Amino acid sequence: MSTTEYSIRIEHEYLAKILPVILIVTYSSTLLFGVSIAATNPTYAHEVLEPAIKSIEESPLTKLCQEASNLWFNEKTLEATLLIIVIGFLRSLSELITALLPPYVAFTYFIEGLFIGTSEYVMRLILVMYIPVTVGDLISISLIESGLFQIIFSKMKNRPLGNISVVLIITGIIGIIVTSYLATISSCIIEGIFLSYKPSF
Image (cartoon, rainbow, N blue to C red; front, side, top):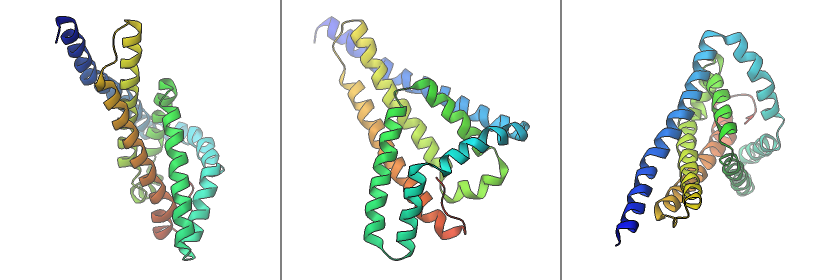
């Protein structure tokens, strides 16, 4: 291995360590900022969350989730499972597209922070495993964006792409798929078992 190749490899390894940390800290900070705002100014949090929750409740994914729940509890397990697979795929696709827009990701985590910090949603958040899903989602998106940033930096410097950037992206995609299906099962099935109202996200 030449000196140039070695220096490029070291640079890729350094970026692979530092970029995910920077992004995770940034997005975690926006999420915690949302939590603190909700705790100190619940009126503002409700004003922001009300249209967001209404939008979620009226979204096509929510309607599909409700349909999957109805099928499941009517013992149409196969149809419900197939619909859950479709919903999980659509969630994953939506998350991957979102990962291409870092400012929007930061805003989304601020909104989720407001949601987590609003006390009346606590039981619902626990039932649908919202917090661990959000954390897994945050880490996965940070890994994907870190890999993409590495590719951009390599192109800007006219240097070969490192394998680490590809590994970061693949790991992030796998994480997104796992959290998307976990969120789908939680909100479409588990929530329906414990709560009397229909699942809404």
